[in-house]
Image 1 (cartoon, one colour):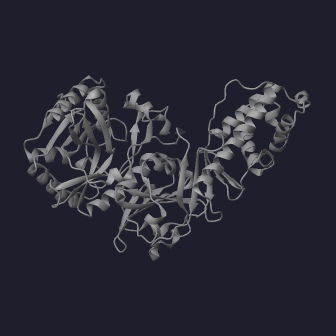
Image 2 (spheres, one colour):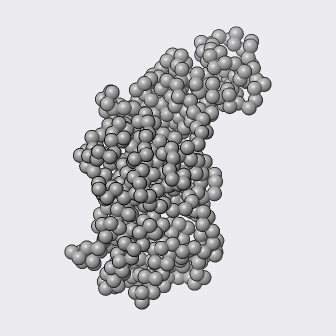
Image 3 (tube, rainbow, N blue to C red):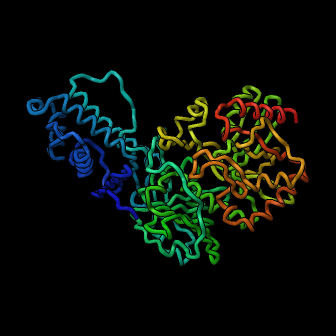
Length: 564
């Protein structure tokens, strides 16, 4: 585990490297200006600010935190003698920099519903009040120093970016998992979007491998530093435990996976358990283990800067889910699924299949843009991962379901119209960097897990030069294309150039190819038996950065869907 530069004092935890601030309202809730200015919490923030300020030449930035607060108090009571010692512009600049410094942290407030029975409405109001307090204090100081009221007011998230209500849940804890008993569950979560968050890493490396030991055997996390996000991933119940220094990923989960409630967890055994941010793992990489005795898939992700990228959180969750699906004779699908309602009254369900960067999301966006008013509505069933379930009672022999209620979208390749359409609800990760991402809500959980039929399943081919859509007449040729999982890597992972991945899915099928292959065989047999369109769309993302070729292929798809 890497050295951590943090401060824990009173009700506040500050990680200065990852810019994480956790405010425990149960330990100390600052409800007015007097409490705030006389708190240890504000002294901690000012100490960190003054230490981090590179320019110590200004007099005010050479003060102690206690003297700095005294200056603010004198300003608030209109003690004009303060300006005899410090220039007004100097005070104003320093206070503005302090405010920006505090707001540069990802700030999360936490309330424990056990100590105080907090209603949902109170939970939101309590955090709103603190945000108002911080914002109003800043404005009061600013306007008093500058000598006139502002002309423009911006209602930014001054106090916190998010708030959690946590509580202990009673669940069917196997005896081997007693270490998790004291860790609180996230019961309610409130985000203040759009959220702009940053991590030290911006790319995922490698795949996840199995280990013969159960990661829980080595877990010794402090319950005061760990949280559990109970998630419904498809029809799997996942308990996602993460260290507080991974709050970027922990909060982003809220836009991606349905938060399970207490009734979903109480007296139930989870299908999946993830330990995210453990001190040490074998080789300092991520692993999974199948606890066959309890039938639980357990994952571990080490604490290091590389794993701060949200892709590690998301993909480990999906790997555990997919392995669980394979062992239930279901086929994990790495792709996107949309249900399209056309203006002519037709409804078609299309599944785009392929590994990262193949052009699945780009094809969907292009389809929306090209179709225009020919499409009445496009519903996302899953954005990245779903599953096919063989069912002899189904009229088509199988059905599809999704896993996520949100979409983890690469900003680099999105049209501006689509990107900004959902900006106010998005959680943005490293938005100014290459491979910038946004997690946006996409659909309700009930719709995601509904049994959906399939009209078209296409492989996203980003390497061939053809334009258009190709339907496979030969089942074995189709199967081979999907199983080979070819793509030209675009730098969204650590791969470069042409690559192949078993069934285009390094999150489950790659780990269990022998168990997956018979399910693949059955799925292709069923699809061809029921004359479902199985083909490939040429996205050109690997060899042609212009959209003309992709648009040509998407136009061919649109024509096929409209005419069938």
